[in-house]
Image 1 (cartoon, rainbow, N blue to C red):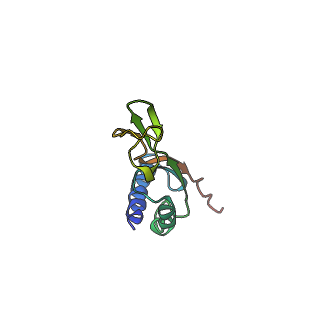
Image 2 (cartoon, rainbow, N blue to C red):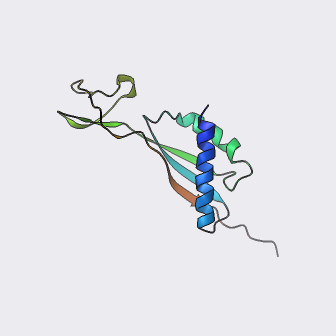
Image 3 (cartoon, one colour):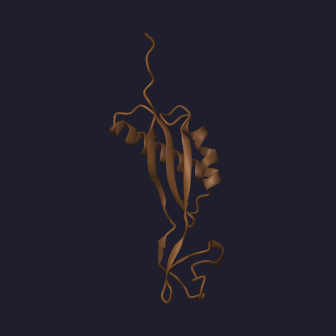
Length: 120
């Protein structure tokens, strides 16, 4: 399952963002995953908690936003593609070799955790 290595990479990137912003922990991450990215969102979500153990992302919630594939049909312009049909226009069947969106794998948002208060 390559989603575990993807989760580890997301944790590395998010940890760096936390360091750059002087934050200790994150409570949530939002990731944009394209339908054509070869990432299985459910597998990524399942792998994330184990990969985050012992990091500033431990206990953080991972939200995955699925981005549909959109191709450029020479006749119909931008069209939403169905992965099962391939890179073909759903209206006319013409090849749509230009993928405008849908292959993303992006860390979109990090929600910082509130600092823990020290006991007095």
